[in-house]
Image (cartoon, rainbow, N blue to C red; front, top):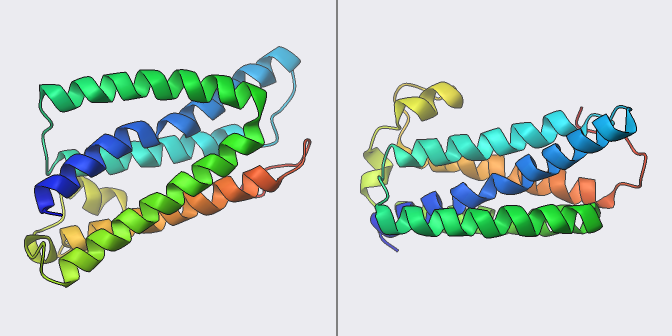
Length: 180
């Protein structure tokens, strides 16, 4: 894979990656309002996950500006993902969290492969290209950080999302959020 292909893939995937956390938080929020009780601390963590995925997107958008076709596919993919995840989460939230955990594992593999390609010289520019300012501020990276450092930070985030979702999938009804 080349740098432009990675960027196109990452930008597209990150636009959809924020959907599960946001939709799950919205459903839990509405349920909390409807039942007039607290949700056990899940809403905040799910919104943080969605925001973190959005920051991944914004970071990589500073390196790649998608065209009309990509933006159209993003609109279509988000429309399908939001509605499908909404219905699935209403039916079986645990299954949805397990599914997202597996998707996040795939994201970890994608970023690991990207790091391998950087280190093996297939994307040499990312080894020396300065990290975007948005990434330096968000992850509190050193001013000398490179795009490779950003990929490391994003992969670490994806690993956390993977673990959180697998834990959520294993919780029983009424359990509190262990990450609160």
